[in-house]
Image 1 (cartoon, rainbow, N blue to C red):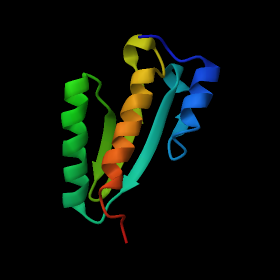
Image 2: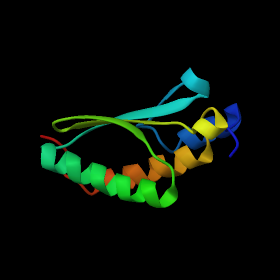
Image 3: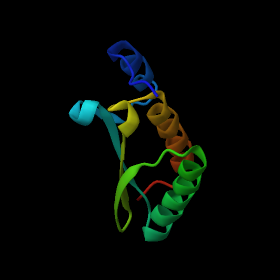
Image 4: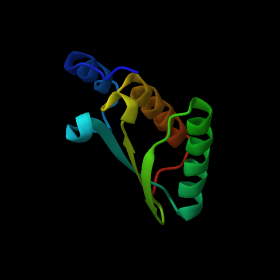
Length: 102
């Protein structure tokens, strides 16, 4: 897996406006999700986990009650790769099916 070039990264992130880029560790993207309650947050994490396992690409995440923070980077590429972009898009699609927090 190849790390994205600067131009590839900028193009990919244009379609993921809710994700923030950080240059640490060769490049990573992060997003915070807030749900109505813990049950919704956990259901979201479960669905993401099932997809991540199938695609053999796993997020780094942190959960407290209704909040889930996700970091994506590809360790083998030593930075951001197309696998991270694809997983971010899938995560956004999963999150869109949950009601936003009040």
